[in-house]
Image (tube, rainbow, N blue to C red; front, side):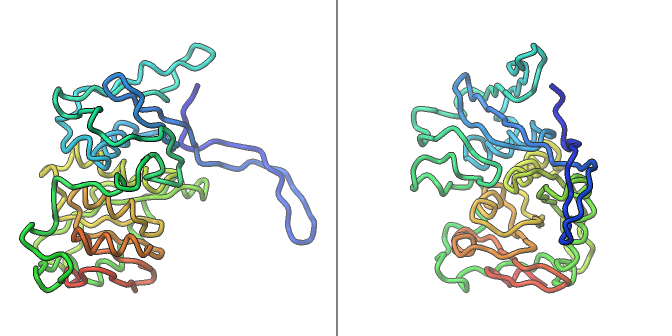
Length: 295
């Protein structure tokens, strides 16, 4: 079976006058990925094939299973066999460093996660929120009081307004299909007015998968490793709770979205110290938590 990021299809096209035509179209690829953790089935997620090692690594960090790439000893795709006997790369056996994960103390999970939901596999409500190994607010602070801790300026408003266009330049699957979300990680320096460096951009049918792929890339390739303190994450979708949580788990202090945030995303961002930005379009945006990071 050939795993493809985009698939060609023949479609019938209709317009308002009733005229029809037939022709080719491109669709975003979507396949199930089963993750087996130390011999036990852990999760199945629907994703666009490609960058699957990054996806698995970022997903396990987001689920508080690992805190670094060194916690993962092996990701093996040899177990996936299609009905015709070919390898399909839809099953990944993950072997962790001894002592990293205790399945008996881990929260119970439902196995399946759709491409539209990043926390659907969590079986209990109290297991939705995870504790990050890289807190963005000092433990001595009172989280309900913004004035208790003064966040340094991270990036200028003008540079934040440019991030959606820079993300858009990385969206090759979207250009072909119109059916993929995207996320990009930008590095910022000491000067908030300097142009941030695009570190990586990734696409997927699932917005949470795109973020996991970006974080997984950073786990293996970012020169400073985790946490990703001097970075900003830009996403093509709305600012949902699970995306803000993924930022917190990786130590990313700011997330910008082109669409609206949810109330839970904003509340959680305030709790854990993530600056949540929404409606970033045309050079304008709203900062819903910790606006002091915006120069």
